[in-house]
Length: 272
Image (cartoon, helix red, strand yellow):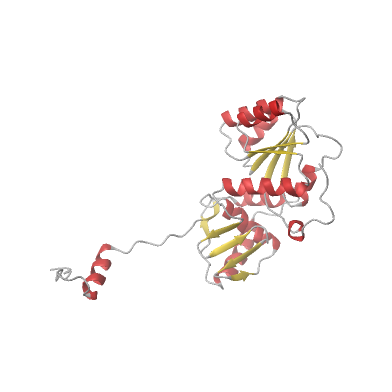
């Protein structure tokens, strides 16, 4: 694998997705800087070449994806894919290789891989393909996550509500993105810290309360203050708001007063 060339598209240089990734396998060669590259994009990365340790890690930590280094000479990686799937791992599994013979490719695909990346042109390509797998696994088909009136553009790293950009700091944006990708799930303050800092130099968990407060004020100023909900004693979550159905009595009253239903002639009486 090669480093991204100096002529890389500008928007790719700006990508900084907050993902927690488990990398498995020994380095493919001395040009393999995949883990370091993902960290440079602010991804949190764990790494191991021990299959048993990998299985333990996915049991105890919530990973967004597992990335495996694959080679024809190392069949253990294929066996690990099967064991991860049998164990109930739901996050995307992506295999990366410099070159791979067709029989090995077929075994990898049959084992239940989500994407197989062979001879990628750059680290950026691998990063974007992993990001796309994570996004789709969370139920979003577009690079922009749309929740109610709020749009989260993962490529531009910007948030809009009703077409107006919300001015957020880098950490504030990352928190919104983390919660949006896990829409409907409660994340504890400790889990959010883990995704932001990866266990390194983490501040007091109460800092998350401060971030959330500032985010809510900025969203509220643009009419979207209810995006992030508090689950008392557990943490925070993003839940998509759905329009409540019109009550039957209200509908009947509207229809009766409109007078556009010939022959109905009935008025709704309450408390007769």
